[in-house]
Image (cartoon, rainbow, N blue to C red; front, top):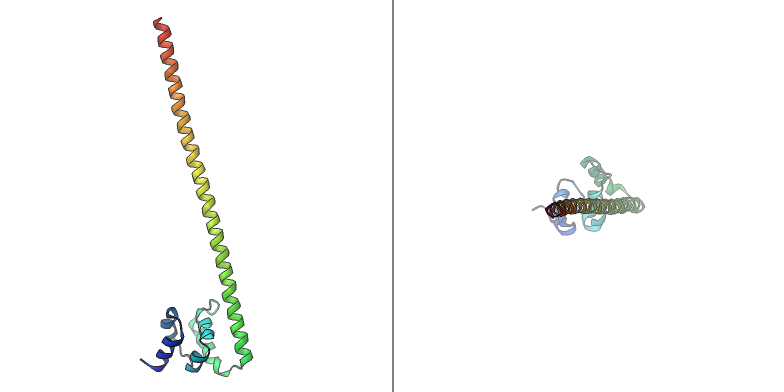
Length: 137
């Protein structure tokens, strides 16, 4: 195993290790700023591998302020996406509950209609039997 792979194994979460091996990432940054590397790897706005590699290539040329700004931008992106996902999940749950409620109401209405039909049949049968008894008298 190469030293870069060992550093990746040591400093990055398991779910990113395989992805990280597809890039040339300066080991120094893997060791000193694994959080920034993780943010770049997980970024949705940097959807192409070429874009991510470009940022890894730029890291050695960036000063601390630029790296802090990059970290801030990627952190805010991650937070906003998490908020959107939470809202989406809540909305999906709400819609599902409405559907289930409507489905249950529909089921209830169908059952009530079935009961009404059965009662009506029994009433008609009772009337027929009563008429038959009256005819026999």
